[in-house]
Amino acid sequence: MFKNFNLSIREIIEHLSEVEKKLDANAINNLIGLILNSRNVFCYGAGRSGFIARCFVQRLAHIGFKAYFIGETVTPKCGREDLVIIISGSGATASCICFAKKAKEIGAKIVAITANPSGKLSKYTDLIVHVPGKTKLLERKSYAPFTSLFDIAVLSVCDSIISEIMGRLGISEDMILERHANIE
Picture 1 (cartoon, rainbow, N blue to C red):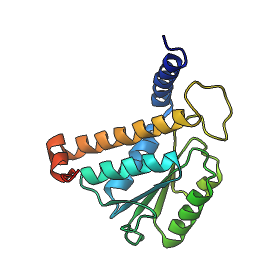
Picture 2 (picture 1 turned 180 degrees about the vertical axis):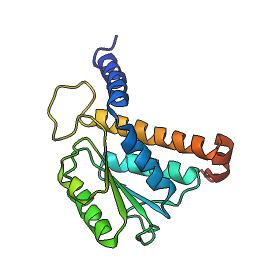
Picture 3 (picture 1 turned 30 degrees about the horizontal axis):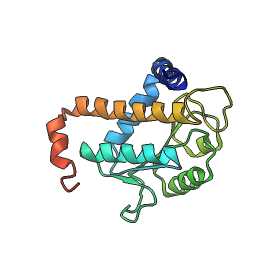
Picture 4 (picture 1 turned 90 degrees about the vertical axis):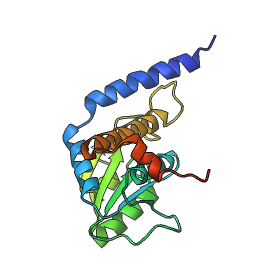
């Protein structure tokens, strides 16, 4: 009945399988270490990457971390003991570079989650987590719309990082419910 729908779903599943094989386990482990050892975790992304960054902030808060999305009115001051995670498929988004540069001046640790590890953003980072995926700068035929392959892969990577931290710290889903919103 559906053509593009089924082709898109298959492409996404195959892409996630490829991402799993290509991820640098050391980079993921280093990111987890930075999260565990930071006072606060600040995340940012523009557009759909921003939605994913917000999802990551929410999950980090659910498991007990002080996590914030850069630019919100309730976001506190960033300092040297803090971690800034920037999600940018292209590695060239102006606002991402601006925030990374400012965080570097402050002395925070900076991680880029990107499909383009040699993008301008990399100049300001302490760690790059390369997540392959189609971005605005990467032209190729895809049934998954525009940047969806990158977006879905990053969401999966971020949720899997949360799962790993939960396992390491012995955090259960019941413990998450204690922090989950109850006015919704």
